[in-house]
Length: 291
Length: 330
Image 1 (cartoon, rainbow over the protein chains, first blue to last red):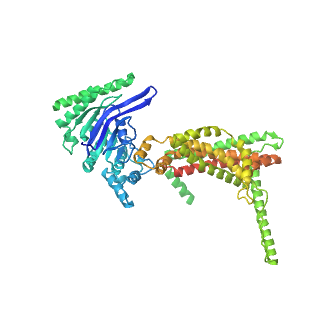
Image 2: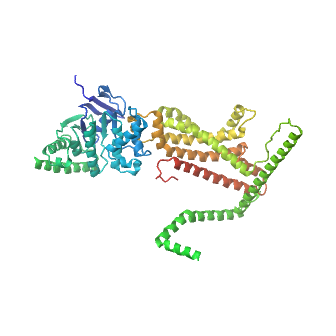
Image 3: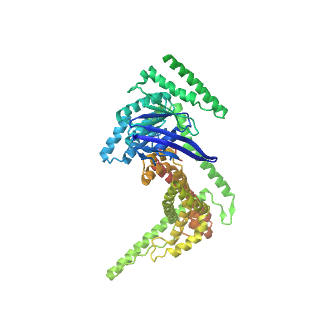
């Protein structure tokens, strides 16, 4: 039997509430090959982060389970390193020590000089060696996220889990970091699962985009293979018909098939429906022009 | 010549806006507190002047200042007596040794009445020891309660039960237990000291314990997740994540504890007649001379100043161990 690198099988999770258990996820099945870059996309609250947390071991699935190299995931560990949305660097340690803490925990036994070398190597991958002595409070949000990525990479993870890693960053910084992540993925060939809200980001970075249905009992809706040659250049992609077709498919899934049911709160619903109508026609128009 | 150059340099440097700013700064740091102090002294003097007690007029600022001088003189006189006593003793011993080489000199300690400054030292030492041991118990226990829900659940009822008890209520029990348990022919610490220190420790435990537990249990969940992903062991987890996060809360607890401990110590010393500032106050009260009230007032102000100094000491300690130097601690 063919076994995949990482396998989610019939994963479901119930959260206890005052009105009985709430099923957040149901029957999530996914097989991921080594070195694949997977994006999880879906509306807020659909359980993307929960899937990631289950793979990380931070949440325990109520049904089904996760196998990494045929071993069941039961607890968090450095072989499934997480890049958190808000960087989560320890504010009292400088950039070097934040990464060093992770390096010292890794299974590879290293001498003092090797630890230093490995920390510096990983910071070099994310272009952060210039701020090695700075505290997290002294560097920008994008730089913090770079250090967060370096920390995760330094654990030599079998799977790199990224929870909306660029969600809190401005568009320019985000583009820079996406380029860095593509560069690193090309160089190291890590298996990556990334959660994102950003359709462009998903298409640009991924080998496959896993689109999730709305909760409760959210599950995998569609999986889109992105057959774009690497390395991918964001400027060239803007005029690439295939790229725009993929983009259109994701948008169609999100805004037509899985259109978010408007919440009861009227003020909120006005805001979100406005955002929807503003986004989709403009993008559809763009796609038609290309096609 | 020289003075005129200085004036010139000063007038060059002070631009109107800068002058105003410095003036405001000086007024905030020096002038306003000074005004408060002067108003207080004036009110005090006015009230004291019109307040007649059975021990004479209530002491005003001047009478209190006079007693400060008297207390310093008394201390110096006592110190002279002490040196004289030891000199005499040494001479006498040397004399006897000369007559009889086999004689082993017996050094006796000076047994004069402790002065005001001796009592200050005793109180400070006692509160320090009591506070130190209480913190040594409370901080680790607090960390344990913050980390483990079951530890918290099992200890919390006890905390809630013992927290509101005035340590003075414990005093008779502590006194009896110390005299029963702490039995030694040549005690390193006086029993009275142990009693006071234990009483201080009993009240220093709770604020530190509770604040530490709250601080530890409210560590950012993202950082806890980082710790889980890195699989930090318990010791590294406490050292790298828990302690730095909860330092502000731990110090809030420590400062509260030290403040309460200092207040309670004075009361305990008065009640139990244990050496220290409290005993000084009580002795002066019993003495009932015309200077007593002024001397008590000196002690009262000293207690305030020391309490303030202890808090500042803790604050500077907190500043030195706190990782976030940008926070304005006060």
